[in-house]
Length: 85
Image (tube, rainbow, N blue to C red):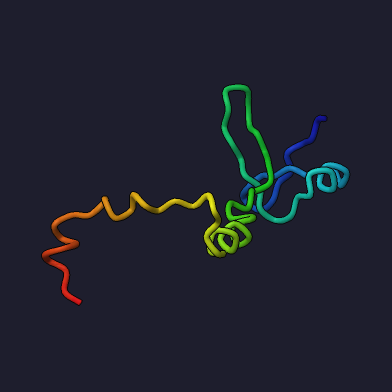
C-alpha cells in the first residue's frame, strides 16, 4: 500500500485508510518502531491488560498447590535482630 506524506503545520504526516484503521482497531496512539527494513507502525499495547484478573486470582484463597514452607528459611539478621515492632 502506498501513501503520501502530507503537510501538517511545520510537520508532515500520513493518512491511513479507514480499512486499515478498522482492521487494526487503531485509536489515538501508535507506536513507531525503527527497524532495519523501515518503520513499523503498530497500536500501543495496553501493558497491564488482564492484570486485575490475575491479581484477584493470586489474592484468592491458597490452593492445594501453594507451598510456602520454604518462606521462613529466607531471613536475615535484620529480620530477627534489628526490626522493632
